[in-house]
Length: 174
Image (cartoon, rainbow, N blue to C red; front, top):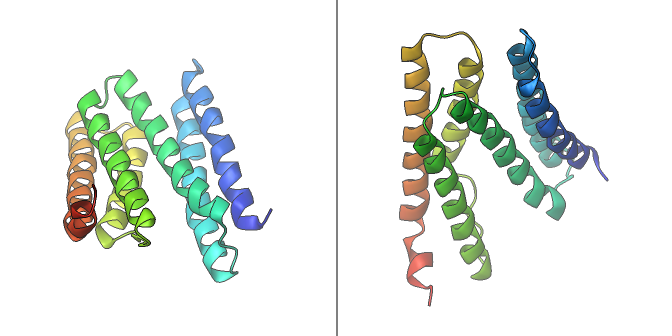
């Protein structure tokens, strides 16, 4: 097991810890959860760098890294829905986009084509992470609404872009 994969596994382990901390009924739980979320997010950046820089790219990493990212982000957003800080429909938009893009990638792979992460997907990921961090802080309701809007709009834009750029794959589906 290489270093990049160990960091991915660490991120997966941090997800239930992150949720457990959120459910603790202590005044500083949000800040501890935020710290865990930030550290977990940083392991994503670090494992990607290590995998590419030190040629540690593996099939396990290709599968587990994006899954770990989706689980971490979904866990945070589920918490926001549960406490009334994010509408459930906004989380549904994110989940539908993730399933849609993952499905598109599977169909493309079956056709021998790889769909790499595009610029808009990277912007979506970065802006979502920043917004989640902000939403854990005591921000005004208006800024929280802006964060939800940024998450939803970047999610929709990147999802539409993935599908528009790869319409030819969908036209081959029988």
